[in-house]
Length: 231
Image 1 (cartoon, one colour):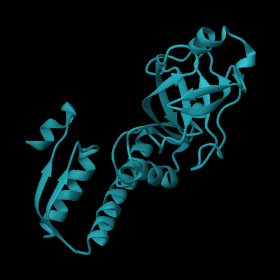
Image 2: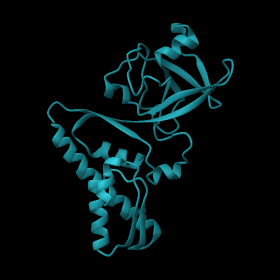
Image 3: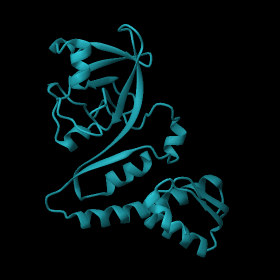
Image 4: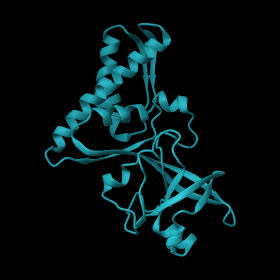
């Protein structure tokens, strides 16, 4: 979720870059027949995290990645070739996506591989996914993927432990925030859909139940590698 990502991003010290992305779809109009495009919303540091530089133009700025930022896009190399015949004049032109004008600021190299090879359009503000209202995003709806660039001085084990501690605290903070919003100090039912990071959060949930803060718990997951933990 976006709140969880920002908590990890702001608290971690193991990564030199810590980025998020979300797959989405956009409809292109104004250039012949309407066309469905595979797209991705990303944080401004997504491409620096991957070590990828635009072949043409520039990447996204921090200002564009904030609420109210300019509507800008990066094009895949294949889309640029197909729609603009590889012309450098594409940078600065406008595309209409979902009825909104976006300015082209750059073109990516042709070397991007799975799972990004099929993406045609990239745009900033990963906290504004299509189809999800802002209140659901702030309440912790899960839709993001996260990438980090590990510091040379940090081991994978150290990074995993740091994220585990931060993740556990974030879960507790979300729980306490929910209680404040409800104006109560305990609930009868805690229901969690499609739980992630099961080791950490099941431990927290069991503790809440042992402390009498929750009477009943309902949990679901679609991740097969977590099934055994629910037995």
